[in-house]
Amino acid sequence: MVVAAGLTDVNFALSFWTALTFLILLVVLGKFAWGPILQMLETRERNIAEAIESAKRERAAAEAASAEMKAALEKARAEAAALADDDELLWRCLFETLRFKPINPGPFRECAEDYTIADGSPSAKRIPAGTRLLVSTQSAMFDERGVVQPKEFRPDRPSHESMVFGYGLHWCIGAFLARAQITQTFKPLLKKRGLRRAPGRDGDLQTIGLMPAHLSVQFDR
Image 1 (tube, rainbow, N blue to C red):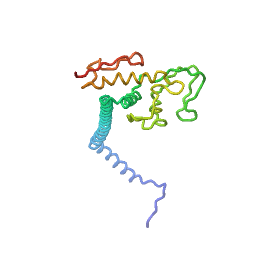
Image 2: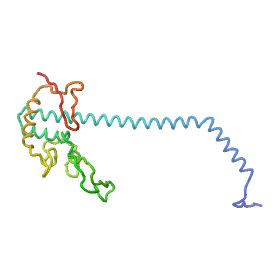
Image 3: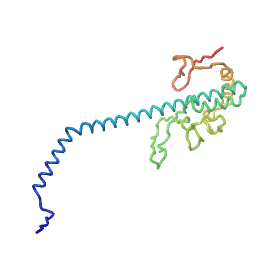
Image 4: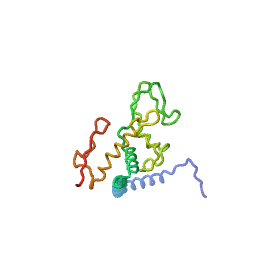
């Protein structure tokens, strides 16, 4: 005769041997398996972390190399324009360079009344009245909403994509004089062979506050 076991019936003998088998398995695993398993997991985690760091370093190195190549190309364009006495192209190269490295990041202003920037968006920021602000024209010149391919060096870029000399009512009244001065100052310098930064600290751009003061260079006679 076969007796069916109910759902609430407990087989104590089976439970005992199951628990004992489980405990024996834990002891065996703890003595022989957990160490190698944990070591393997730690090694794998370390390898993944090293791979991520290596990828970051390689990416940084690639970006640095790309930046150096772009800088060399920009310099070559300006030097070629200077050697050809092409003042228009030279100015465009210098003007585009100023977009990347402006002498002034923007004007300081004081908020006249409470105002919320980007109101209604996740990046909304409330500016209380009286707050002193830096209106970054440098940032604006890299805003993809108004500047085409802002990270690309393009001497043929339309002038309205630059705010080096301000904009609208705040356009610099000396812009045309500055254009002539900058072009004619850099043209004989860029014609020098082996033009390069001076070694050491002299080759670093010195500033007074945010404004550039001087930069020493060398060239071959």
